[in-house]
Image (cartoon, rainbow, N blue to C red; front, side):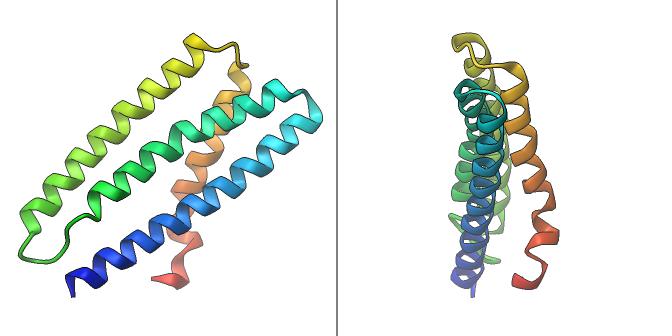
Length: 128
């Protein structure tokens, strides 16, 4: 039973990452057509700053499952969330300090992918 729960969680996480990648690609292409290629890479960078920590969080959280591993599930959740937040901050600071990507593009990609993540419970309502 616990393997079924972790398998379902991993499948939902993969589905979320695919939807985020699709939304990111559409927004990046739109920015690229309207402005320049620098905006394309800015949007991609901002979106990836959300997607990589989300993937690591899902990998960490769905490593264990079941009632017998309840304490480990909770500790994995908190550790995954801490990893996600700190890695997001590091990636965004790295993007803004060490590249010359436009702030508007980076923040647009970040917010767009984050909004998809927030809407995931509504988008995947029928799959759970």
